[in-house]
Structure formats: structure tokens, C-alpha cells
Image 1 (cartoon, rainbow, N blue to C red):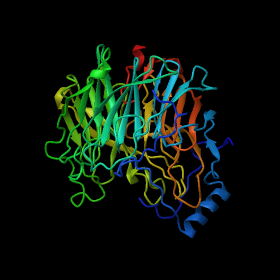
Image 2: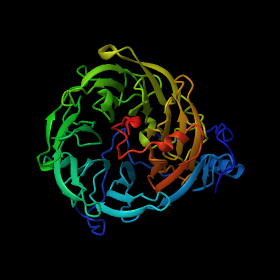
Image 3: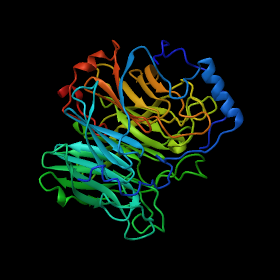
Image 4: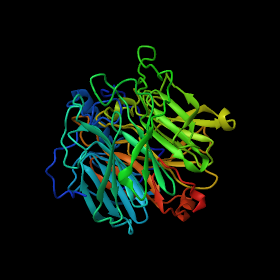
Amino acid sequence: MTSLHTTSVRRRRLGVAAAAAGLFATLLTAGPAAATPDPGDAATTRGGVSAGEQAEARAAIKSGEIPGVDEIVHSDNIEHVTNIPKDALQGLNTDLAFQGRYAFAGNYDGFRIFDIGNPKKPKTVAQVLCPGSQNDISVSGNLLFLSTDSSRSDNSCASTTQPATEKSSWEGMKVFDISDKRNPKYVAAVETACGSHTHTIIPERKDVYVYVSSYSPNATFPDCQPPHDGISVIKVPRKAPQDARIVNFPVLFPDGGNPGAPDNPGVSKTTGCHDITVLPSKDLAAGACMGDGLLFSIKDPENPKIIDRVQDNVNFAFWHSASFNQDADKVVFTDELGGGGAATCNDEIGPNRGADGIYDITGKGDKRKLVFRSYFKIDRPQADTEVCVAHNGSLIPVKGRDLMVQAWYQGGVSVWDFTDSSKPKEIAYFERGPVSTDAVTTAGPWSAYYYNGYIYSNDIAKGFDVLKLDDRRTDPAKRVRLPELNVQTQPEYFRH
């Protein structure tokens, strides 16, 4: 169903409490990936909700204040082009990367490659079974990089789950050769401390550097010992990826980082980073690191240098991801309140918690500072059975404007303008109604990215969505064409 309402219509007070916080997929013989419980992207479901919450959701659907179960609604300036459901890989869908006419979609059970040469009719090129949450994904040239952040019996794609307390267990980075898109070949693996929750690549001519973000050390885990106050840096030679190795583990938090509770109640203790975005053209990186936000120099990629560090111990619970604007004078940080397992887009939580934080970058060189300007959060109402959280998004490349598309799990896809960093505003949206009115369920878009004229979204439960945005404010972006896009490796859009 297409909504005839604009984004200014669907606003209301729900008035209820928030919910608690080379192998192809035809060889589906390996066990499913199991996520290590942590405050980040945990795949959690609260079994039941109160009768009052169920009644509230049903009443909101009946009145038209929220969409019906699985009903699709969107603003008039977005078209839902198509949806490709899950196929052989039935795990949670995760991140996306792009190269030429191909989209690469992560899944807890492996990854899927789509031919998007015709965005209206994407075709599956390959499905690769390689279990290991989250299977965060990036591509560069003939190489594909895959993160494993669950304890496995070994580094193969036939591995099974195994306790992290066992020394022989494996977590880390996997590297595939994708010169033949129909037959990716597994060529290398590098074990990293505490696994790889996410990763970020810095492509160079001869080598690819990989920044590995991981966290939640435990004294009982032989390969994930505290303190864990930095990131793993991997160097991958393009012509010999089998020689990939760790070249550094820079300490980013010499003081241990944000202590979390009880000093800062409701804030995650910093034990590493969740995600890092690099802007190679400016030698800059922004780190979303649990209880801290970072700005650092990557002029020497093996030895990143901290420029500034900020905390928000009032409204931010878990610094999740970061995005620069094109001019590199702003950073948007997201807060994953509830760990991706709770309903946080309601009036009980409010507009500032679980929001994006917009920071201006002031000053020059090593004296640059991150200065807070405002919060942005979708105010379209969500039922208390809908896991809704600020998640992954990308810039929409328009000169002179700061525009972004962003995933919000069951809050859907939001397009918003932060040109005035003190007054951000939503200009378009797409979403589905709740998966259920009886239980809190993890679903909705994990990632929503703009690539070569279309928005591509990887819905955790529903599959691969293609959206088309038609709006005078965003239309100039249709003329920008990129040969490759890894959103956490932000391009210089207007050089292409």
C-alpha cells in the first residue's frame, strides 16, 4: 500500500512504556551463526508484551496512526521499486557494499551478491554460506572482506559455534577473491582480538588496510582479554591476500575510555570501538566507540592519531556509527539505545535519547574539535512491539547540502537534511508496519544507502529493498556515479 500522507502527518503520543531494553548456500549443512551477547547489535526478542501494549498497538493500527502489520507506507517522494526476499541464507540480513553493477549483502549465515544493473529487477548472482555474525561486508577491487564476531570452531566456512572460553575458538576477518562474482573464493583469514564486530577498509594501490572494531573482553576468553582499548589494523596485499596480517593494535583510550555505570548510569563502558568511518581524501576518521566519540587522523594508516574525543553522558547510551558530511566539517554519530533489541522510538523515550548527534568540526589540524549542535530522531510513531533504533546510513551527494538516508530498523528508512546542523529535518520516509502486535521482534532495515540513483536497504527479516527518491532537493545526486561504495570508507563524491 502507498501512503498518500506526507511526513508531517503521522505524529502522535503513544503514551505507553518502552519495551525492554568459495561455499554456496546449497551446501546448507553448517550450524547457524550465534551472536556473542553484547550491548551492540544483539539479535534479541522479548517474547511477550502486556495486554495493554497489544491493545494500544491494535488501536493505533485501526485508527491509521501507525501502519498495519507488514503494511508498507511511505512519503509521496519515495517509490518502493522492488523487494527480493531471503532465499538460501535465512539468518539476519546485515550490511551492504557496492561495486559497479553489483550489490553485496551481508547475512549472519554468509553473503549474497546481486546484479543491480537493472535496479527494478535485481538478480541473485551468488549466495555464499559462511556463518559467523555479523558478517559485516566490504569490497575493494577483487577482494571482499567479511567480519566474524561469534566464536567458531575454526576459520572455515563449515565452522560451528564453540565457546569463547576455549583457546582453539576463532573469530576475526575473512577475505574472499571476487574476480568471478558467480564463484567467490575464500583466500585468507586473520584472527583478531575479540573478533570483528565491524570493519573499515582504507584502500591503497598495493595494499588494503582494515580497521577492525571489536569489544566486550572477558577474563575467561583466552583471545579477548581486558583491557581491550584499541583496534586491530590488518594489512592485506592485493596481489597476495593470503599474506594478510595484523600490523598494529593502536591504543585509542589510554585512560580506559568512558567508565560507564555507576559513574555514568545508562552509558556503555568503553572496551573498544563499534564502528569507524574513514574519509581518506581528508586523512580523517570518526570512531563510534561505545561510550565515546572520536575524531582522528589516518595520515599514517598503520598509526592513527587521536585529534579529539567527546562523550554524551546524558542522552547517548552506545555510540554506534559515524558519518562525515562531504566538506568534512560535520560528523553525525548514531546512538544504538537498547542494543538493537528494544522499542525506543516512542514518546516515553523521547526525541533526544536513541537519536543521532550532530557535531560540527571546528578549528584546524590537530586542534580540531567536535562541537555538539543538535539531535535528530524520527518522530513517526512506532508501536512498542517494534524494535526501532538509529542504525546505518549514507550521504546523498548533493553539492551545497548535507543530506542523508538512514536505517532505523522497524522505524524504516529516513531521508533527512542536516545542512543547518542545529535544525535537522526529515524530508522523506519508507517503512513497514510492525511484524507483530504480540511480541517485540527484531526486524526492519539494518542498512539504507544511496548508490548511483537509488536507495538500497537490507531488511533484517524481509530481504533486499530498492527505493527511488524523487525530490528537487535530492535529484542532483542522480548525476553522481561511483565505481565502488563502502559507506564506512566515504568517497570524495564529486571527483567522479
